[in-house]
Length: 357
Image (cartoon, rainbow, N blue to C red; front, top):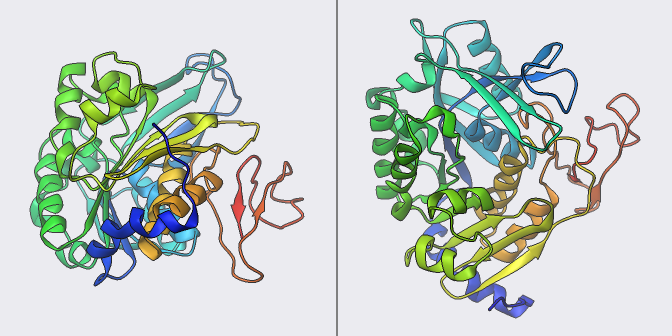
């Protein structure tokens, strides 16, 4: 049964985080892919129907790193890109957003990954990837920036780097190093089925590191996939098949409806924020950014979820159009439907994002 929390509950709920984080700084290290998304210049069409495409920086772990930095946090990215124009452009964007790039490597013999993505009129998302192999798949254990990982408070990762060698071995080595260093381990599987050899390989690969995590964020669709078709809204399914005794927090996102959260002592729901979405691509990454930013600075889980809901961006590419946090007269939310040239707050185009000031 879901519970409603009041301020007195928050200390108990967050005690597991506090014990693990008390001696660490606030650095969040994100490990994985950094790539170029090509999105149609018009919405609601299939890839085949798109009249033209425009490039946008992407890659879920990189999106999270930028989101944390934009909120005022400290983040680093570890991954590999091609020693090409796209690769250098992507790293420049990370640096412009104050993301530590000392763990990024350039491969002179492989290209930066490309992905074509669209949200069709029927609501289905369509992907087409070019990675044969791309540079992100070729990061080796020897190329890991060990000091950056050891300095992290939170080590965040997905599952795409588990698909092929040598990136799989590099991922597992980085995960082991982070765990031994006392980092909080954060996992967003970010299922991209077309990249895996088969659905069975995807399920096995995602679950291969499941038990090691402290924080896990999954969607309703991912629950259905990982459980073999079970009801994603059934708490018993989540608790019996996906929750683990060592988990500090498991979050199930439900799109516009908000999210459900599960901890060792509590479970409940946080409602979504009403907004008219123009594109939900990158929304999950923005949500994770809000969670990890808050946990890194204040391990109050309930407050973290509230902030994450407010910072969920329904924009393409959180690398370029992400969340901002300004200091001044406290936190307040702002949304507008204008473009960046006429927005009264002089922000980037923000409809329907909630911008934290």
